[in-house]
Image (cartoon, rainbow, N blue to C red; front, side, top):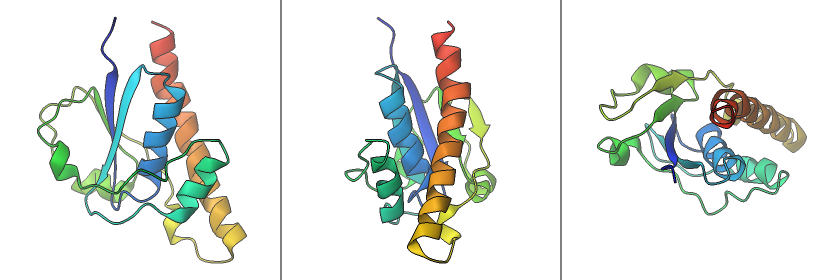
Length: 143
């Protein structure tokens, strides 16, 4: 049996995009992946992120915001930044086999009604999901 592919998703606050990516990969990867997320700053998981993930029947309410320092000495098959700021400030991960950047729009900065904010979080969630499906899951399934 193969070891799971270890993936770390990084964002600035570890509150939305990286948290949704962690939950999505864990759910869609069917045990083939170990998913983690962290940020350059520790905050909290946004309630909007929890809500739009629940729409897909993926519960991320138990996930917590973490800083990337706790992961620096761990080995990963891929470290993926999901925001431009984290990409610029992300340290070198000496034990990462692959480093990628996905520029995902920040839903946390959207102002307006609850419906407008949730629409921004859905858009980010769907963008992350599409990238996971095409860049992580399809290559594994094709092997």
